[in-house]
Image: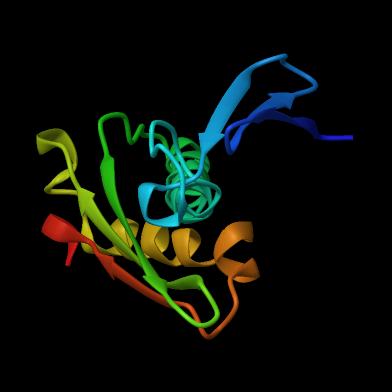
Length: 137
């Protein structure tokens, strides 16, 4: 088993990672009867794409002899109604100064690695994913 999810009432859950014991709380978004005080389940979905991409990039970078510390990804989730669902995920990469001049071949390897992460491979093709690589474009 990976985790447990406990419904706490008032549209909030606590998700516990069983191996580490760490918790994440979720809350329904304001536009869907919630307080919007925590990540919503769909926020986590969009955010998991960014975390997966940057994690596998980090693994690849490590094997190539460098570290990606400091890369930041801004995540925008786009919702659609009827049925209510995630229709798009927009990611904007911010590359730290020490990585801006990384050679083009290494950049391409890292970008390809990111696009083949498990979460990216699991996203339904109807969900539009846009990635802006910033200084690596």
